[in-house]
Image 1: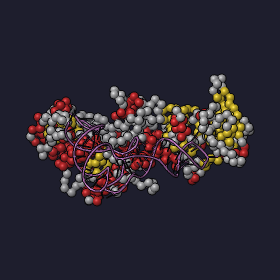
Image 2 (image 1 turned 90 degrees about the vertical axis):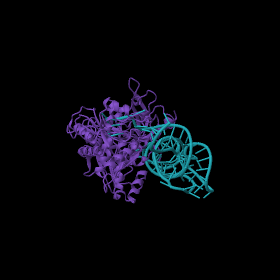
Image 3 (image 1 turned 120 degrees about the vertical axis):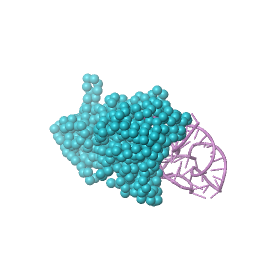
Image 4 (image 1 turned 90 degrees about the horizontal axis):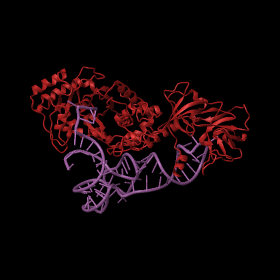
Length: 565
RNA sequence: UGAGGUGUGGCCAAGCGGUAAGGCAUCGGGUUUUGGUCCCGUGAUCCCAGGUUCGAAUCCUGGCACCUCAGCCA
């Protein structure tokens, strides 16, 4: 469902696509693709690309393929392909029957490689990786030509066949494009097209021992699938001349000719986005896995309680441009709050409970009170809350020595218990350690439901649960994984791990929750009145309910305190 | 110092020669049975310097800064 109130913003890629349609390029068709390498889980940065590619297809009535760019068996795994499929689907996109694998094109790619050799545009090189590297030159110094460069077509064809047949050891030879060893663009200095690698591929098994490089697989795959607009991130910009050069050799008249367009990848404050670093965090045990709720992965965000809608909204709002960027994670959080504010039912829960006894409330009496489920949406109805003499309130909602402008409970002060009564604090009792054990109050029977008949006002309204009519639950409170806004930008000798936030996870095991939550199902999202949004962790079982704090409420009281130093 | 890119308020980002949209954040104010939501209000002359023009963020020239590229990774 689109939000009609906010039209989707434009961006330069939409403009390009629109112009291509106008001028009838490729018959005016639009076919995009999202092409992840299955070597890790998808993250919020991929979500940007997914929304862009599928969004374009949707808007221009084309289609978008999901393609696994699986040309390097050493790093890839089915665990990853499975998670990718699941995550893209969860985000709400549909590729229909267009799920592809670059590995399905290996035979065709091989044939095209032979074609290049026959045209004299590719040759087998016998140098070792180090030799290739050394002979490539530097950006300012031209490279040296490989001895294999001058071999005959027949010889090259034979050697390439033998490479495929497994006659040479790993790394001993490569197939290289014959372009220009002096090119100012490093990617045009006879780039490697094929390497020998005896690794079992997660789909093709041991059928191959030579694998195409990215540059020789990507554009070709686009061509095979009839992709019109091949959208990728900026670091591939310098590859574009090679992308075009390779396509030039195989493209046939009348066929769709794909065009590569680059955009700036997403950087998010207080997190890292590179798959390698995320993999490190998983391997080193800094997080519980790829789907740890603190991870910026789609599965982590899902487990944290993010909605697909909020992520798509975020992708739309950050825009698409070519300038490097660092988006404040506050925007992501805002998108979530906005979504959840409308749909998350409000419930009562106390994270850090302290007993409150209402001295003048009859012992043994239990009342049912009406509680609105969501003030933003009447259709969500209301429920009954049980009220009694002893309740729990948030320890933080009582202050013996209240600072200026504190307007919750304090000695002698009156506040409203949400949906219940006005209560006034008349004292406290302490344990042997001096800690407050109980807060003693009296209530005004004339304020049932939280309204006073004489019109007097209270400044504070606090949440509560009946001691007898509530149960315990565990709550995990998450904060940013990194305390630095730019963890990747560690200073001299620094490492992104240096700014790992030691308080990114806090666990509260003695939380009290209202009875209606006992029936909460994994994944369900709620707003705990005044505390923030929470979701039931998927791993929760019936005996121990675990909630993940999805995002906190905007808290002007906290901001005020911070401002006051 | 080679090639390819980018530079608009704290963070994103529109703008495509006619006199700087929008969002987030911030800070004020109002409403409120969540210190939430909602509603108002708050800031830039566009990296710098020249030039063209009646008029430039938008065109030209020259600088400066930052990013990407020297994997048999993608």
